[in-house]
Amino acid sequence: MSEFSALLDLLRMLLVDPRTAVLFALLIAGALKDCLSMRIPNSLTYGGATFALIYSAIVPFSTHAGFWWAVGGLFAGLLLLLPLYMLRVMGAGDVKLMAMAGAFLGLSETPLAVLWVFTAGGLFAVVHVLVHRQLGRLAHTLREVAGQLTLSAAAGTRPASPTALKQSVGKLPYGMAIAAGTISYVVARQIGYA
Image (cartoon, rainbow, N blue to C red):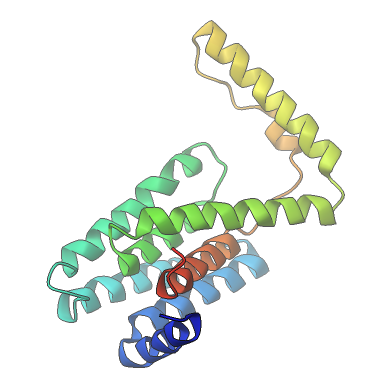
């Protein structure tokens, strides 16, 4: 199948099955809200997840991809990003946005989408550091964190909250990475690259 016909199939799917179009719209809305206010509203994440769960129960993708498939994706998105929230690297809204996306993608697709999200997040972070000319500060922060983690591991203790993180190069609206990574994954999967 050529890329062009695969993209036509994606457009046809967006019209016939609104699930993917709704997912894209919610991800873009979440990214925009995150950029403007550094917050992703619960109404967006909870409402989107509820839509995905109900829609998957009524109109499953296939006989094995219904309600429980969507619940599995929701929990996969939540559990894969929850450790980053617990380490205070990511906000709760970001975790909920990925969980919502997982409800649309299902259990088997969500971990793959998360890999694309992490890749997009890494690219956004590199661009952010370069645009704000913070490469030296980033290197210093990474050395401090690595040193503290090494000492904690050698001593067999739990690492303290690194003071270097307070001097970080800034916060990123990670909703952008979640939107870009997830949408890129869905499109790449459709055209046969994922």
